[in-house]
Image (cartoon, rainbow, N blue to C red):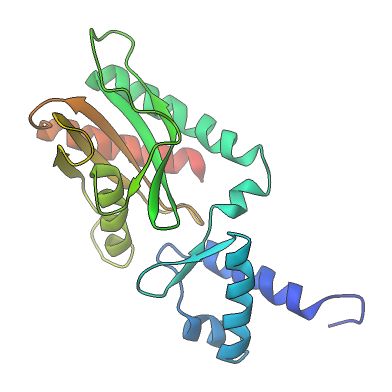
Length: 215
């Protein structure tokens, strides 16, 4: 390392790159081994990056890229929405329900793109910026399922819920897999007692389409 470069900054950037290349996050020990530095250095790097929302740690202690990375460039978040909109629009029109792309923000699920169907008499109002706990609602639960599926052999399917976020509303969502640095789900919400299985399967296809658009 030359005198003109910062070793700490270099390590911090390497941490972000390592986290961006994994879907299931890394522990302090794993980062320590990959960087070739002791755990104390890694703790300090993560604490600094967390202060800027560039890194977040889940309940299990695994570090992941934070949404602050998206905020570094104001055009990035709109680009994520733009990339996802065609698949969301197709899903909403075909199913006749409000479709959404939801990303993880800390311990919450954050709706970053929403498309409402154009032809229905009524549908659920679901707004961009809506937040809810990861363990409530189809969107959050699908993300949690995706975390387990990231290390498994089979691709995760879809999650169905009813009345967890809004009385009388049912949801279906599937995780967006294989996009470095992004943890999210694609789903629909509708006023119904339950979501038909075929809608869940359609949501899975939409999640694949969104993942492909974001790669």
